[in-house]
Structures are given as structure tokens and as C-alpha cells.
Amino acid sequence: MHTLIQEKRADIAALCRRYHVRQLEVFGSAARGVDFDPAISDADFLVEFGPDADPGLKDFLEMKEALKAVLGREVDLIERKTLEKSRNYIRRRNILGQAESVYVA
Image (cartoon, rainbow, N blue to C red; front, side, top):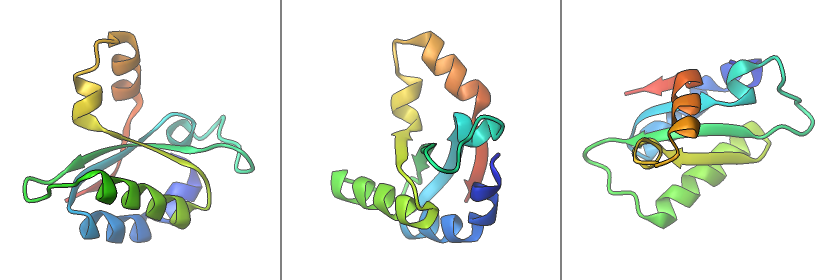
């Protein structure tokens, strides 16, 4: 996991609690760290909301924008259940195989 994510874990955890997130995982270059370019790379996250959460599009987009503000870069946010249902098994297997936990409630 890239140090940028590590350094912001407390702020990310606060966001996760605010939006009732059960689990947040990072994947892609931000997870690998070695090919992450701090000047241009975005951060890719999988999110799983808790059972008491009912995130509508507004809350989902607000969380995405909040993560973007904390990290100071573009963020791609995907619901884990959406990825798990994806028919593209190669993409699904690749992302799930490299995802690293950032926050667990």
C-alpha cells in the first residue's frame, strides 16, 4: 500500500465511520505502491457499506469527494458487491486478488 494511503488512514477511518462503511479496500497502483505516481495516479477503492447504511447516490458521491479531498487526488470508488456480481471474471479476480484492507469496522 502506498505511503499516501498509510499516512491518511486516520482521516479515512473517520470518513468510513461517517458514511457507515463496513470495509474499505484499496487496489490498483495505490495498493501495489511501486508503480504509483504521486503526481498523476488516482486511488482506487472498493467499499462495502454496513447493514445499517442505506447509501443513495448522493451519499456515495459525497464519500467519493471526501476521499478525494483527504488524499488530494482523483478517486475511483466501486461498491464491492457490484464488482462481485461482475460478469467480467478476469477483472473481478484481478481486483479482488490485489485489494488491501484500509478500514474494517
